[in-house]
Length: 238
Image 1 (tube, helix red, strand yellow):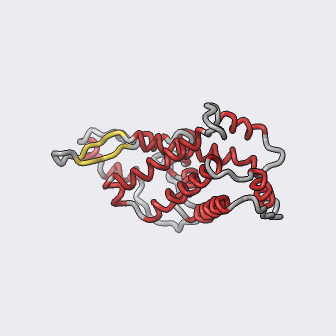
Image 2 (spheres, one colour):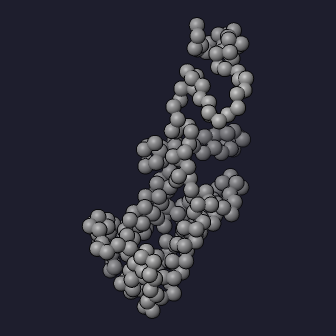
Image 3 (cartoon, helix red, strand yellow):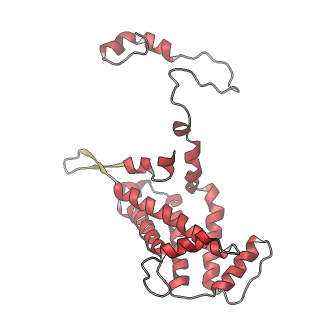
């Protein structure tokens, strides 16, 4: 489960299929999708942890350490955060892939495009506030602290761009539980990952199921024993 959640093992092993010039189905690696997904998810988590400085007082030491590490290259003033660049590149590739690849574009729905545009709007509005249209960070923190303590205060110095950023964030939070973005929780509930793979040794039965006559594996093996042996496949019972 750790390999699936942290480095996205299934996506790393994923392959893409396409028709060659001879109309043959060819399978190839799809590592750019894995890399873009990894870059986006980890950058988003990093940015979320970095934003804790607006919601906590005193600011945790690890939050300041993350911000310092993110601006390690010391480019520009204010310092350019590496995660801001990485998350834009990751989201940009994921959107470009849906628009450019005919097979992916054919199966893409509004539910696939909307989260990408929403996340891009959220990220780009934050980048504009930090590097181009400067806002009062203390006023933003005053508003954020007021929201988390249920005593909201609306400073005049915040600006309309921040409220657009806050609106996009609110839409994302409200949309999240009802969208495909909730796959982050679904991986923990996947039976193929969190249940024992011993269904040949014992039958897993829900206690609330009504009793029914089933065709067990032992019965199936006995029924097709000669065919299984002829195919050279292994048998549980010799």
